[in-house]
Amino acid sequence: MYVKICGLSEPEHVEAAVEAGADAIGFVLTRSPRRVTPERAAELAAAVPAHVLTVGVFRGEDPQTVREAALASGVRAVQLHGRHPHADFTALKDLGRPLVRAVDASADLRCGAYDEDLLIVDAPRPGSGEPWDWAAVRGRPSGRWMLAGGLDPSNVAEAVEAAGPWGVDVSSGVETAPGVKDSALIRAFLRAARHG
Ligand SMILES: O=C(O)c1ccccc1N[C@@H]1O[C@H](COP(=O)(O)O)[C@@H](O)[C@H]1O
Image (cartoon, rainbow, N blue to C red; front, side):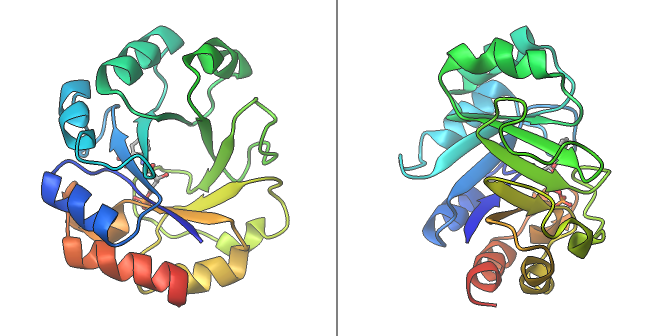
């Protein structure tokens, strides 16, 4: 099970996620209680080993803004959240970094339909921590896809069973308050995602 821990802003939580075996960590570079500047993301990413994918999360920005923030932060992948047009993905291809398309379940759920490398199927309100009907997407997405939205250590195994994703992505469910991560919850989430 591929696991991404998103919305990190403190070195101790980056370290906890990496040590507990996260495959990817996300830095939110868009409007959010978890927002970090590209410069802060670059500082945090400096301690991340090469086998862990660092992902810059964007929502609604134009491709030029995304490009500048991705280059300034040095993130190894770019996640476009919401209904970005196909042209935005095309415009970012030459960055040479994996592109992640994150959408709710009403969108086109074929990974690659927008030339993306990875698909995330999320709740209607990204980063809200609200659980949704994960079982409703079972069998619908194709290709490499991750489940997100309202996951936490207590429900991730059930959600994986219900939806059948290749990976999972979490933010609110490893926090004690919006934007405040907790190392013990990060470790518990990774354990539960992989071992039930
Ligand atoms: O985390 C945010 O604040 C955020 C803001 C804008 C776009 C995406 C955001 N996060 C993504 O939301 C899900 C996690 O949701 P949850 O908090 O676990 O319910 C994940 O894909 C994040 O990358």
